Image 1 (tube, helix red, strand yellow):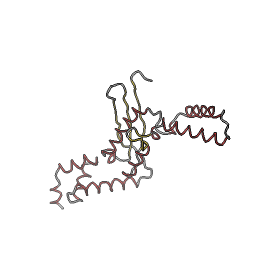
Image 2 (cartoon, rainbow, N blue to C red):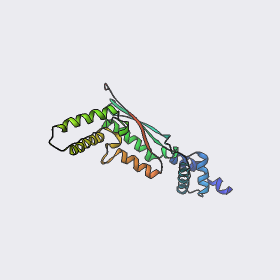
Image 3 (cartoon, rainbow, N blue to C red):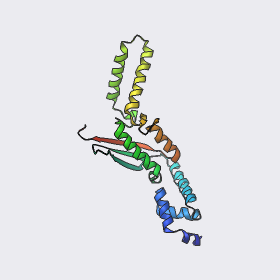
Image 4 (tube, one colour):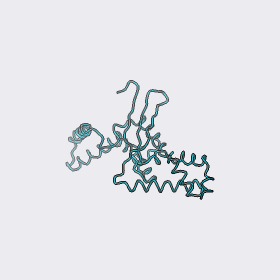
Length: 203
């Protein structure tokens, strides 16, 4: 074991740390346990981190990244905070890429809120009132009218709520579905905490 520990080079430890985001000592121990095999060491770290996450009384997403995107013309910029449960996942390239993609999406799609629950109640009430007035003149049963109002509200959500919007790079999937996929893949809670969009001369 002592011989194996000596064979674990600092370069190997650094490479594993860069790839996983785990601490130096954790990476060294995992490599020793894996007999110097980086792939096996990564698996060991994944299991160890996942195990820690599962034993928490309440799973919280307190780690993550803040991604900033500035459009090429310099007139639109966005900031997105994407959270995970552990730094291990937050340093994952796929996690960081999703944060970047969402930042670009926000610049293009101009969402008003992260989720439907985050929409100001007065905005939802205003939209419902407009849709109710629109269908009031239509010769249809009240139950049908309500379904139409609900349908138009849903369309409003799909156009203005980040997690409900079709992803800018692939309209076959919503931003929310992308977040859910990554959460399933990592085994951790992944959350879009907040975003901000700035436009030169805009509100």
